[in-house]
Length: 444
Image 1 (cartoon, rainbow, N blue to C red):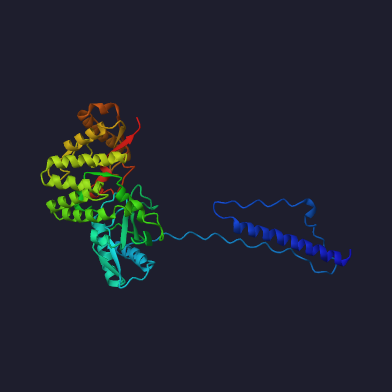
Image 2: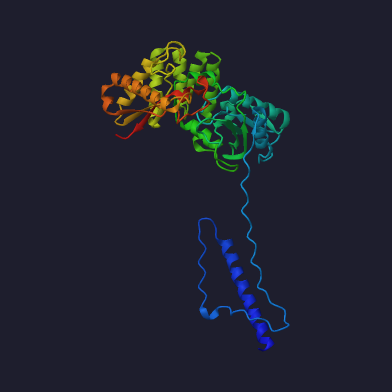
């Protein structure tokens, strides 16, 4: 064969192979998320590259170009290590403050700290209070560009930076279920002027020596429900990135939150008259009709001996919970028993008032209720499930005595410790919500 024909065929073969590789590369670049690359047009048989022709004797072999190497997907980043509590708090705070993207503001940026909370229950604890104090100390020592001010309504009105954070027990897979083995610290810095997050910080803390006892107001609180204000706080901190908007349920209620914070401090200090006045002021404010407000009204009125006002406030707590389809009430029982404990609440346990109000508010509705008992994880789970069912049946019978019409609209169930909110297994004030009785609104 003529040497020119051999060379020409080799060139055609080489060009055809390179064209296929180039086409594949271009298709990969244009395949954006949410779109599919257009299928390549079929190549006519007549345009197929000719079969390779062996070179004549003595000619150098012509090899097709090597296929481009495919880059390996990057490995996911390793999760942060579990650190001692103090180190974890400082690690998350330094990460948050050191990389915050904020515009220069002479002379300094005003920062307020909305008290940190438990990421499951929304409660403030000795641990979250200690975290807040450590962060304030760190800012004043190492970050002179920030000016920490109290969390008050007047400071909120200045549209400063606001720091929020959650402290959440997680298991060895770092999920909020089962036995908790460490704490996830999530911090977020938000700019009220722009309505966006400017930084995030994350760390994991060892539980050794950590005091998770709730503050007095949260220990005494009779019930838990999915409150929009608390949910907005948690969602602003968790599952977000720098640049994301502040959750609207939080930003719409932050002014009321600052007033509630002041009222909680007064209650914890035993200044019940002052606390009551503050809660009454919050109730008249925009977005003041919150679970924390009605809880404060109930607690302060009860402490001041105003039983009628306390009863009305507890009814409003029940209404809030039933509106959200889920209300957990801290009926505390004797260990291993379905009988109420007589040493569970400040002063005399007001369980008859609670039961009557639950029956009254539920009786006004046409929906049905599933009454679910819960236990802490202490002991064998089969026993916990039977005990939780007995407790739910006991409460069901009590509210049906007050409102007989509910007998056809309620069912009882027990889940043992499978749905624990705290999961530390301490069986004390820190995990009282794990032994709650829950009322879930269901269809009939």
